[in-house]
Image (cartoon, rainbow, N blue to C red; front, side):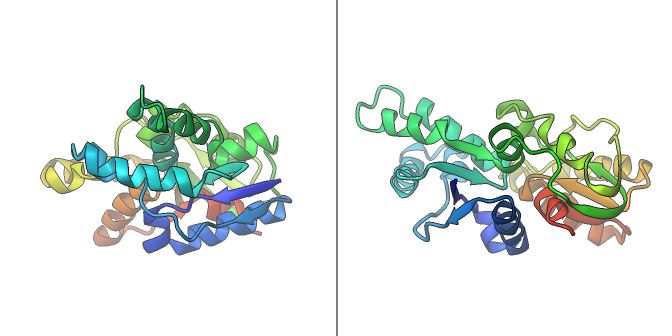
Length: 238
């Protein structure tokens, strides 16, 4: 099947290896990948900051960009969730609501796509060590993807996955929250790191680069010996 990659801003600008791993993984599983170079930001930062009118212009551009895609897959629960919000944002707009609904219906977060559409749980990945998994807020609470990452990780050869204490707690990123509420965000991410350390994990795995950038940056500044990996990189390990 044809899969159109919604690469997201953070992957494109800060974590290109996650995009590369996503493409390699999907191609190995038999997908033909398309990458529309016209794609930009989905409008989430502007929209969440109250700039609805300006955000809608970015959203309309993304709807046009992905209009002819068969499936849209993003290595981000947060950005996939934003596509799912488009129908609500364009509600009662006779031109854009139907297009927004069509885009939302064919958009999937990466692990969701693997488990629910491709019906695959074992991708043949291998990674030796002890890991814990951070459940990002948007992906679990808004998108509703909770089990797929764990279903995939349990089949990674050599990987022991340890439950993360208080996994439901936010890491403190929250997009613009971490900028506007820096001291509070810092306390939240420090608490998250303390729980990660309790697991004695070699790896912290997650599915949203915003969370991983926030937690990983703090881990690096504290000099903790924990490797941060996106789940696409883990599933692409051989």
